[in-house]
Image (tube, rainbow over all chains, first blue to last red):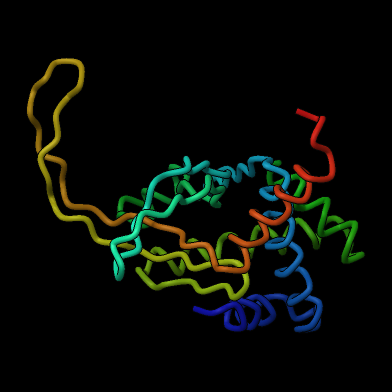
Length: 94
Length: 104
């Protein structure tokens, strides 16, 4: 399922709203999560999961082509952990 | 930040009645969950992909007792953030670091 398909499915269930309105809502939800993580806030959605930032330490890497050692700077990456209900649903337990 | 904050964001930015905002946020989350339940990938451009991965059975150990147990095969969700999302997180934390170096 793509974002466009998600918007279509929701529009079908909410005939009172235009597709455009649903699109704006979907984008707002995704942006809120993105902006929260950019501020290093955690986002916890009960039954769904939580998003937070994971810190990756700086490390010594190697250019696989030349074998040269390069230093890889510390990094921050978005991380998602599925909630209990999501885990059980996906694993066929609900 | 919780679901209630996301709902408030939708309410503030989109100008829909609170009840609609709430219902839509629930529908979005639920549709994603139901799709993953069918083991179908959810691709949200500019955000990331939720993918269901099948894990084989493997051996684990109870860390307390040291007893070896079998971890049953299972399906798990993994989220792969998009480049845009990853860059957004890196850039915004960098700009706050350079704008306020003393705010440690």
